[in-house]
Image (cartoon, rainbow, N blue to C red; front, top):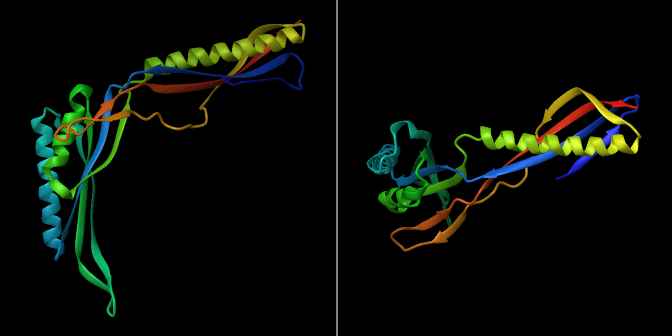
Length: 218
């Protein structure tokens, strides 16, 4: 834990900043699955993307994913341009893309569900992202705050002792968010060709920081 403390210029107070963290295993997988289809016309590309995404959503529902956990996340159609020698940039068709954001609550079957959904749309499918999170981090966040408070109290107590004083009442408490660090990544192991990669949940870390000012008593 990082510790930072200082005695303020005004007499009789000490301010300390404490940091802490707690860890817990994630229980929710957030997945973004999309399709990208090319065709000669906008209508054909749009229809193909719609059919592909509908097939993905159908697989997800057949595997028990609730309707509330499947949300349309994007739709776009753009010109497909290509460079040809002697002709320059030419329009060769159109590309339609669409995606859904999915919440998978059963991590034990999540890898198989994702693999089946990805296979459904063939080469047009895109697995945009996969993230493992805590559906409710209130308990582990409270534990992180406890650790941050103890860190600040320890640091302030040391500075008070060095000043031949003791800590009095708390004057201010500021809940400060620690600087964001790298997100924890789940372990991914290759399974069979039909199952796709298996996902190891690991643990997620929740961090907290608090700045507290105490009275200094002689």
